[in-house]
Amino acid sequence: ADGGMRDGLSLLDQCSAAETVDTAAVLNAMGLAGTLRTQSIADAVLAGNTEEALTQFESLWQDGKDPAALLGELSGLFRDALLLRLAPKGGRTLISGAYGENVLRDIRAGDGNLLWLLNTLQKHQALLRETGNPRLQTELCLAELSGGGEIAPPRAAAPAQRP
Image (cartoon, rainbow, N blue to C red):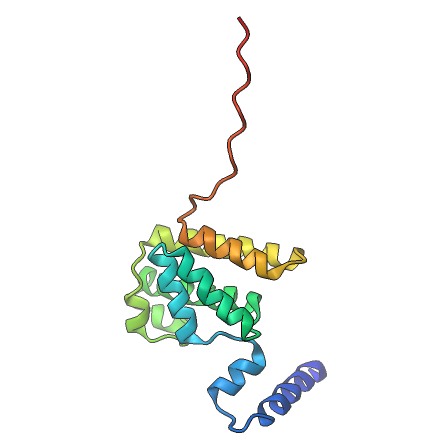
């Protein structure tokens, strides 16, 4: 509990250094992209626009945003959208509340695609903890997500046939 309190005080101290303590200051101190920027990257991913997803990530990276937090925010968005679909009556109590229901319902992806997106994000979040290059791992994740899983290792050359 003491560590959490220290972390909270440290964040408050960082935020109070800003001219105005607002949502942007808190997001900046925590290294979060925020809902609008996360939605924008999700839109690029769902549109299959790898270049746009990577360009937006580069902007976040230059702004000092945490790649792990971004992948977590994308996971939260896709999770909420999936839960709202799978449990339309009780889903409201299951979602995080970070996004409006209209935003979640507007996500253009089937349930199976949302499951694939979430599994892919989970895989890359685990790899992110193991890698020494979080930027590259996040770029690989966004490329895979926006490519619809079409990124695969090259096939080995067929063995030479003997007469």
